[in-house]
Image (cartoon, rainbow, N blue to C red; front, top):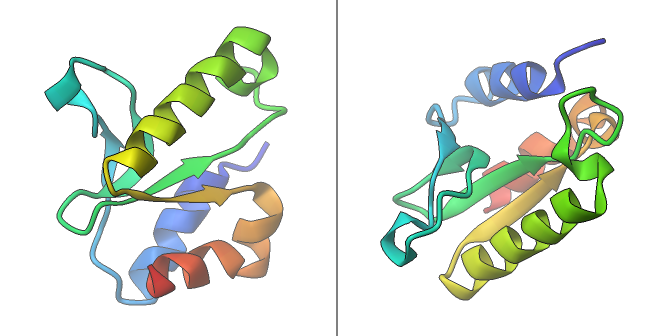
Length: 102
């Protein structure tokens, strides 16, 4: 199975966008250890890859989805722009375009 997060990081590099921080914890200041897959903390831009069919995906369970929604809502309320990426949006180039626009 292809690693689309790595593909997106490659696209980011090719486009000349600053390298993201991986597995960034944007909510530590409120005691939460949630992580974003990729982040640009200074700009408060993050990417969450929604890999539903990945074996290690937390998105496959009800509890995983609840934690994800909590994390995304808290990030947005703290001023973050969160880009939701999927295999299709990485393959089409839409995800990297959204990152550029953010």
